Length: 92
Image (cartoon, rainbow, N blue to C red; front, side, top):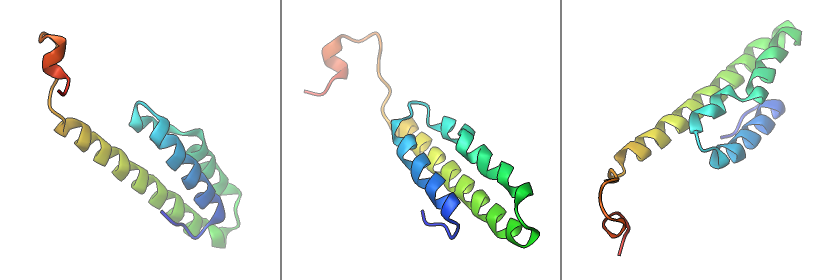
């Protein structure tokens, strides 16, 4: 992911690293850094707001796509039979 705005790029890199560490991947969409970016929009000059807002929205869409992709991968894994003996569920 590359973004024109340096602030958005820095947050994107931070969230990318954090995404790999999260157990519940959808929590990345609630990141305080993302909210801080949205909070900066009203303080910016009018001519910069549109481009900045679009960059933030693109970052959020990229994160949503990444979360959806991860969920699709997790759903495609075979189910584990919790009633089976240990050796049946683990690979040989």
